[in-house]
Amino acid sequence: MTSLLVIVVLVLLAVALWQLTKIFDLTQVGVSSDNSQVASDNDNNVQGYIMFGFLAFIYIFTIYGLLKWGNLALHTPASEHGVLVDSLMNITWVLIFTVQVITQGLLYWFSFKYKGNKDKKALFFADSNKLEAIWSIIPSVVLAVLILYGLYAWNNIMFVDKDEDVIEIELYAQQFKWTARYAGADNTLGKANVRLIQGINTLGVDMSDKNSEDDIVVSELHIPKGKKVHFKMRSQDVLHSAYFPHFRAQMNCVPGMVTEFAFVPTYTTAEYRELPFMVEKVSNINKLRAEKSIELVAKGGTALDPYTFDYLLLCNKICGASHYNMQMKVVVDTPEDYKKWLSEKTTLAQDIKAAAAAEKPAGGVEATDTISKVQDTVNTVIDTVKAVVAKVAMK
Image (cartoon, rainbow, N blue to C red; front, side, top):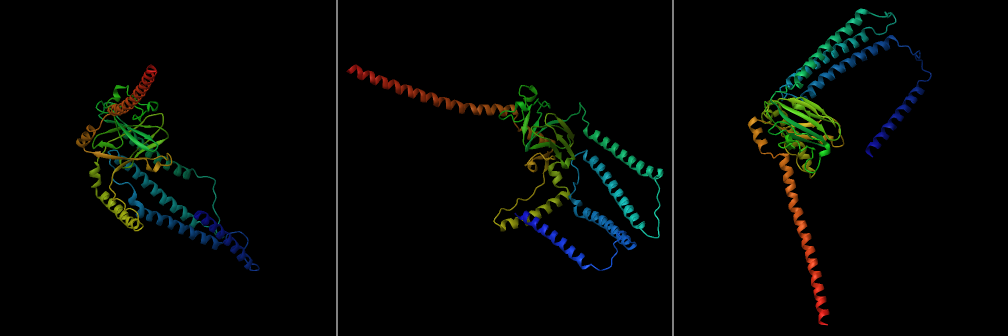
């Protein structure tokens, strides 16, 4: 209703302005004016200064944006390849800002300098090989260097040697949650297929595959610092995207196929929390949450809990109504803590056996109760028949 009211008000304002314009035109009847539709020198001067003003606005707003929101950008990368990604990104930003400042400055300067003047005649030439070469060759060379550097970075990031000692983990995406499957002691993930999804086996792991016997399924991802982790990704339903912002890693999860990505964590969760920029960021967030809590409590609500930084795995594709809520906590442990955490987890095979064992007693009790009731009924019938026979015999 509020939106409709706003739209109605805006329409009425537009109509009012249109009527005011018509009234103004009527007041100018009989007043001499230049209706030639040809710009005068004064018009050109005004347009030139307006363009200069717009150029100043672009520069000022750009600087303001950097100062105001520059701190919102991701800071220190938490993976080895993150430094390379940030380096490529920073080079790209510097080039973009440099070209933007130069080209916008030249564009508006020439528009002002060569504005229309009745005493000047514009010089026209059909083409210039020199100018064509300048604005074609320079961008081509710069883009070629950027692309080659990007390919070099991508190949370094994506390369995983077959003989390399890595940890194999599967990330399983579905609307709207993540599940992780660890390869276990053999470091080989068992086969899986969505057609095998049943009961507790929500990932469709093929339990007839011997490599599946030690696989571990969890809802919170733990990885060790300083060890390369090789992620294999699947999607159950729609297109998702596994996004680790602090690790500078992202890969689409496509239904019907397996995608992959690997990186080496360089900071444990505890170490990253202690970095100066993160301490300051968390402090600022908690100040805002405290102010909001006062407002909520005053309205009878519940105060917000203090914020604590955690790495997150997010979905970077709009995958449905609850896309915003599709995330999983990621904990980077020391190698010792990681081994301890993993050793305390049960395998999927053990979980399936435990679930099956839990169902059997319930089924047995139910069967026993049914048999007991049947036996009671039979005994009652027999007793009734015996009583009837006895009465007949006495007669």
